[in-house]
Amino acid sequence: MNMNNMNKKRSINLNWILLLLQKILNLIYILTDVLVILGLVAITLIVFVEVLARYVFMSPISWSIEIVRLFFVWTILLGVSITERFEAHFRVTAFVDFLPKKVGIFVNLLAELVVIITLIILFFISLSYVEQGSRGISTVLQIPLNYLYVSLPIGIVLALCSRLRKVWNSFRGIRNFSRSEVKVISTPRLEQIDH
Image 1 (cartoon, rainbow, N blue to C red):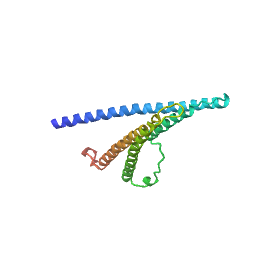
Image 2: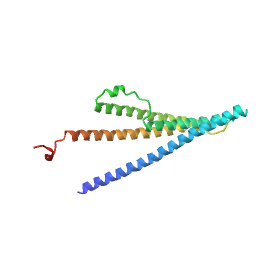
Image 3: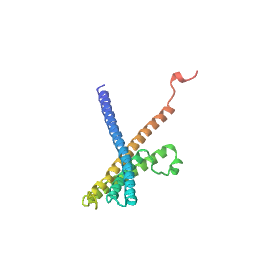
Image 4: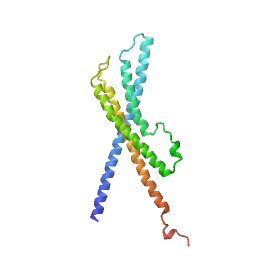
């Protein structure tokens, strides 16, 4: 009895931690969406003002290219995490579609594992770019370039979180899939048998 209470308590603690992580991820996703929208609006407005200044008023804005580049890179790398979240990346599934359902699930999980390993490797490579960027500054605004390069590891971490969440849901789906198979082949109760 005491062991059951301890297992139940651990399960409640694990569920509470998972719920907290879910809420944190949802807040990060909302913040990412807002930042990408603001980045796209800023890029559009700055380019529009630059075109007006250059071709209508004949007085180009010297800093506009650097700011647009900064917003553009951040928007793209944050956008990668959004496409990961909605599984909007291009995939060729013709081979997996011909496999039996169980095998297809495991092939997809293997592909997910390859993507996760690739993202982890890219994260460590991106740290060297951030370190290199700390030694440089932009020509017009004199902003340290690591403000630009830090978007790379942040975008990779956000994409990795989305991918790990997808894999977690896949594992839960496999567990539910195997449970449903057990239910299908389970023997009927006595009340269900026609006499």
